[in-house]
Length: 314
Image (cartoon, rainbow, N blue to C red; front, side):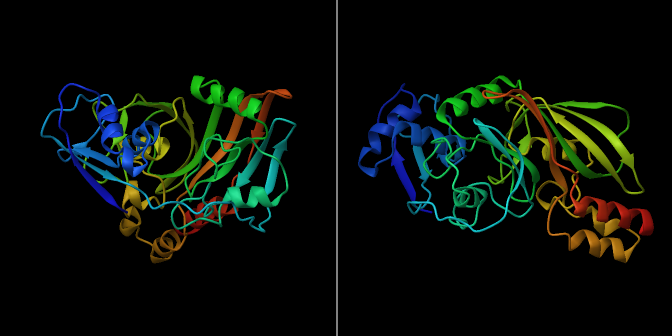
């Protein structure tokens, strides 16, 4: 990933404006620079930079610019489970292990590539390589992903995401048991101060609220319902880790709690799962073509098998 280093030569102007002028020859627009800042790829004197920060003479900005993406979308011959469809949108049941849209290392093996192969028409999306994509799920998260078919539907559904009028429910296998029912976590989320691949509960982060309820308690783990009322990156995973009940298999935010299990069979079962256990289970929204819609994705077999293993060997 190329790194560009520039020295600020004037005081008092917004950093995104200053960098746009300084990086004109690099072909970086103001909106692209703002997006790189949101992704944590711009630092000012070694600290994460914000677009609204006022630049000062002598400060040094470092910009990490991702390698250019290849043009065009290659269709992927992979069967998809369609949970709901009308003239405005389609709800797909994304399996764990499938990346939502093209990115470095996954140019032609994503959900978007599989959608293109269906022959359907989708909205122009938020970027040329993301037709119809309204939101995303992490590679290892399974479940409902909503996709817009037309630009008009994309705008209407995007507004519902922004206004938080869609209702989302996740299922999670988490370590331990909740202390009470329900549990609400109201804790702001921002970029991790050290590990730029992670988010974290931190002062000055964006507001984030999640409600958790227990569906079933087992020895060592629980099956939880999670309702996020905001849409922060990795929100459910981070809030469960904040409660000291990380998602089973979530090494990034939970480490390896399975090391403490008394059963070798269970330890190996968790380590070999190949995913963390978070599933987008239910989505309620207002379709521009059909009005109120509620879509459900059944709990994956991997959840059922893992729970049975804990019943037998826990």
